[in-house]
Image (cartoon, rainbow, N blue to C red):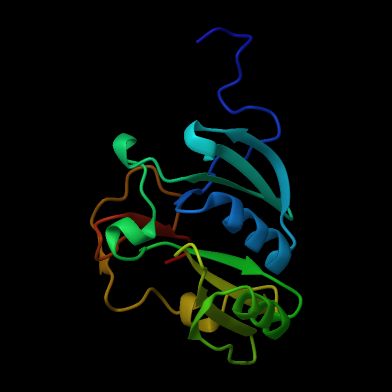
Amino acid sequence: MSPSVQPIPEGYPRVIPSLAVDGAAKAIDFYCEVFGATERMRMGGPDGKIGHAELTLGDSLIFLADEFPDMGFVGPAQIGGTPVTVSVYVDDVDAAFDRAVKGGAKVLRRSRTSSTETGPASSRTPSGTAGASRRTSRTSRPTRWQSGPPRRWAVSKRRTGQAAGARSLTRPSGCEASVPGR
């Protein structure tokens, strides 16, 4: 790679979710109205579709586009749902949830309040993506994470490249995660 080319463009985080939906323009309106997202850019695609759009939400960035099944870029309706949830921290979980439902989202789970956080309240957006609104009331992780991973995760014997005191976990999907101090 040329020394003048940065591998991560300025103004972009290392990880960016990219959502494929049927009806990207409506999905953009939904995220802007419900969560206060700002449309940063939009590129048109064939047949009046959106080929690429970027939304900012606080310090986060989301890519979003219409489905293009011939390119393998399909939305939740094409595959019978989605395994991905976009979680958004908000000041008022109930107000954000109410805006989502009024905007056409389907209720999956109403918020609940504990000593550490309010939420999550979960919904399926009109475009089929899953969303969760939450609000934390403390700065550290809940105790359940400090005491170890969920039992359904198996501890992996791989420890290469981890911080001292961390252990590797294999989730049911096979994806590994490192938990510091465990």
